[in-house]
Length: 496
Image 1 (cartoon, helix red, strand yellow):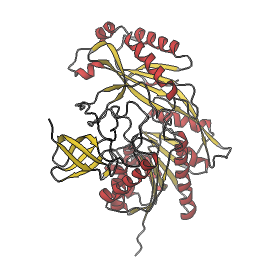
Image 2 (cartoon, one colour):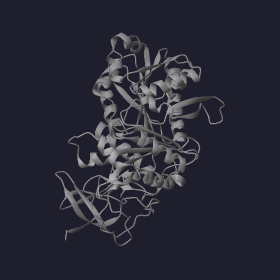
Image 3 (cartoon, helix red, strand yellow):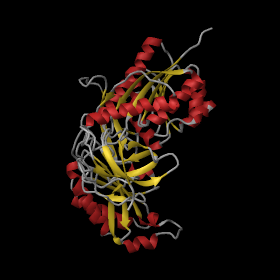
């Protein structure tokens, strides 16, 4: 029997795990705990700088602990904070941002607020589930979320005892029947059940005959694809179901029958089946619309946005509109206060919402986005909204910044850069190029990862004397560790 240890949870770290300082083992990380709780635990894995443990008993219960709404919480890897009251989640995310700047950027930031989500549950308009053949029964199909990476008990701890659930040795699919954070939660179980039955009825012998011989792993051989469930923005009706299958050519009849069956059993649900790495034009009809309010919620002016359901779009539209409004207001304020006359760079511009919004205010905007499907949507949105002073470049930001023939004139006339990079943040090339464009005086940086944001802000300060003037965070993803942050950076001009 493993040795049991006892300790008090000091705080939650960015993974959502609790930190306990042990005299014997140093730092120990535990899941499903709340700060100030006293717990007993066993060690699961000991590494050089820290150890991972699993709680076996809870001796004191914190006031801000709550009962998770989801019966899969702890096994499913989608949520990490359902056991923490929502107000404490928001406060914890603010501390994570502050600590990231202190630890990584070696700087303090101005005080800021975190805008809470309109509702802590039933907020996501899009969820992605994995599909795999059951390793124990090849005729059955698993549909669900990927499991937690850590050794998380399947149930939240009771006041006195925690069940010693099996430890997850690798990430696997957790079959789910509900998802409380999905906007279409009322239909979720029925949709998953229909999909599971439909896939289990597929002729797998035909699929095996078309499968190429390869050295793929057992997991890869069992992987079928994924399902993207999409509820209509600003509406809890009209679900869409985009099924992506990883297979070879020659199975069109198999997937056509699957699509027909799912469509029949889910009337009113738009169903699309396509092959991974296939021509993206096969998904061109899988579009959605979004009426984005400009200015205050009472304003009559809107952007009529079309987006591809298979590509990136924010999952909480109400809060996303608040973020976009704050970004646009910050840019307009800089133009007003600083007397800027040049253009705006909208880097990682997506479907063009920020660029179009700024163009509506008579600013010249150049938007850069690598994903051509998103760029096509952005150009379509410019046409539909009668916007003529926004240009959309289908290329990577790195290529754009290095393309002297196309970008030199644009870069030399830009005053403001709006950034919304992926979670990995800015590359070295982009940071250096931004810092080197002395005419760019303001950077508005939207980030979904406090660590990479802090790293990039520190780099832009060192390379280009950009100082962080303000921050604001937005809890776009309640019940998870993720948080969106917008930082306003201004270049400090040194006079002799």
